[in-house]
Image (cartoon, rainbow, N blue to C red):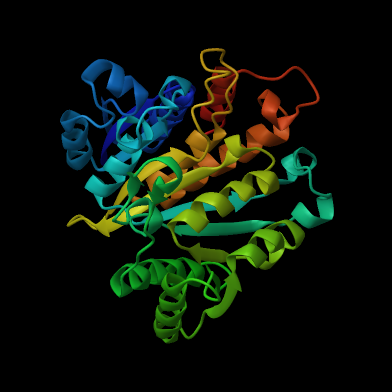
Length: 360
């Protein structure tokens, strides 16, 4: 197969972890006899520096031409106090919209080798294996009206949370399809005791559920779900929620996995004519400017995102499994970065990338 992949390293440690992820991708392509066409674009702070905006038109063109996009991270402290439309994160929202990716899949797995890395007690973390499914194209991050108006005591900030029936139904179906190939359980998260959007959310989820009679459905309020993710995380299989709730709760997964550097993600859209899912793949972590350029970053979230890309956008299940096995082999070796609290001298970002590539 010919793989046409766009890379968007972005800012901070994004360049470092993307380099290692590409190293692993090239090893997979070589071992399994595929072809690879790589292109690179600008997104985020580096795009602002070079083009004046966080999401250049050229990047949009490259993303639409590619079969899949692998992203590093966006964000730099120098932009923290500028208006939202001029921040690097605006580029991330822009590419999600252009690609039409609406389902963010965030696997959370507690590897045996990392049990001690979690601050939670071992018996709570052992065996955790879930996917958090976050709706990505709607909700409060995109709703209108929004903005800051007025002055003095009457200055007011406004954001609007809004969802249509169609948006809720399609993310719900995605969650149920995933659950069918796992433990056949979906937990839908909302705030239906307070929010009208959540009341519609629960109504539509309940209407879609009978299409999947083999999958169990439960509902949890978002505040209770936040607590249960820490108290009894093993109860979850596939957990589906709206955009802002997913943004917040998926970061709790870092506590379960041992480090936010471990978490990959896949943002999925509609299928192309080829049958492949449109996909944007990225580690969950941010740009971590405090360690950027020091070769300290954990690349395993980015490498895990390559595994997701191989599976979802290209249907290469065996190749994806090879990457995941290689990651687990490296974890078991203890040759890991400092965030995973190794017993010996921490490995560098590039050393971990080399180790995973060698284990393919």
